[in-house]
Length: 319
Image (tube, rainbow, N blue to C red; front, side):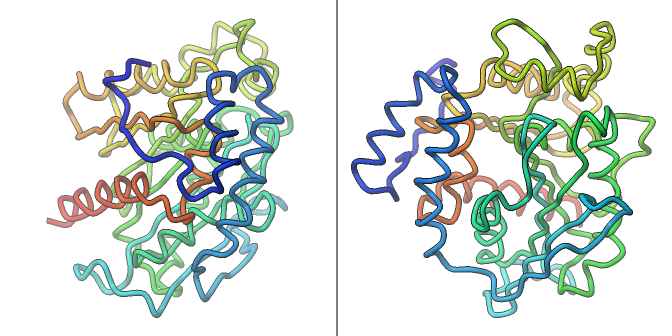
């Protein structure tokens, strides 16, 4: 990634000096061992976000479908200063976790990825954290369908949790970014609910590939299928020019191999089409996991970028 495309932040500044040095060191060799490097990042940030302010109300494992994994958590903060005044309830952030299509949970250890929603509730939002079905039982495009089903639950019920269904913003990380993009772009799924105002695709798997140097090639095959001729039409980047909503595309400086390229490809396709606003963020120093694990740790630069993007495009949507 070109250094000019990176947003300079004080990466890992919330961590003790020794851990900060370690995470800076593993960045350039991230793809040598993504499983253990991810574990190091989660271990480093877990105690930090555990001490951070939390949403006072969290409703766990609310069903939005019949599967045991079709559940979501709702985070609300009745005492937070209201950041928005244009509607009867609070704006809503929906988060969709990653896991290479075959693994992962909405709360990896009780702190990560809850930290994302705790940070946003502190900014005056209601947070929703989605679980979804996994491959190989769940095949393309069922991840996108699960996102849509959860968003329709939000549309019907978030008002009961002090949220405003007209002001919904959706974040997808890694495989979750693929599912969010599929929900928005795949015509057969029927489209997003009308209250969704913007999207943020963070480190998303926006093109399916099983290249020899893709560390998750087998997981991609498990979800997208064995027929590689279908990979291009099933890849969100192939429909990026049709993106219906403002979209922020973010990647870390040190990504799972190829994801930064696919993110830039998606961004340029949306920007070239010129139909909706788009924003690019390349987060200097961070890696595929820390780009979301650091939220609510005291390192606020990226969170504030997301917050600002959501605020701007919510106002435009409601005007």
